[in-house]
Image (tube, rainbow, N blue to C red):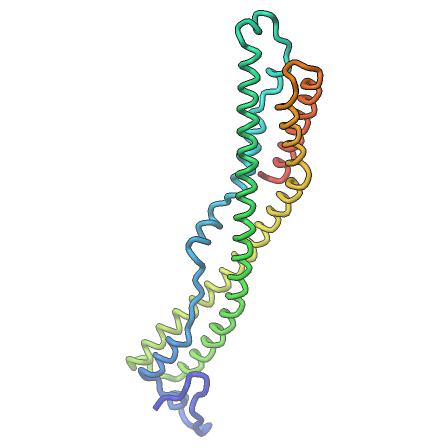
Length: 245
């Protein structure tokens, strides 16, 4: 009867290595039961590949660039007012500003999902930290059991294949560790940058947008608020650009 994988049967020091442990069907079953592979959830993999927060921030920059302050603040003549050009310019500006607001909401949603994903990634990294050493230890045991064994033996050959697969798994674990660490670091930095925007620039932009909507058309207050709004939009876009959105 075979001994457990972790406790090879004791034999005299002069005995051949092949006699230290008899590999049979029970050995294979015990090995299979001991191997618990690490598999990252496919849905999480898809989220990692698709950078939703980065895409949302890039879309926000693009929408900010499309705000046409020049057309809205230029002086309209009587013919422009007669044909409704001034009203058309205001409508188009309001629609563009509304679209920016939608992109801000989308970025907030993406940030919440990114935060949830970050927590899941930390959990997966912890799970891998627990599994990887067990795989390495099991591989060391398997390699020790194979020393001196007859490779022509059916059970030995099958055990060798399992050990080779486990070695590949250990390599994959090390790669997964590096990838998870890099993803966690990148996502953490991205959330930190967005957090800075969320505290200062985004609320300021939204306040200016509300003030523009409430200001009387053509008034001095509207013109002054438009200048502040333009400055806030430019600052927000430039800040996003610097952060690599």
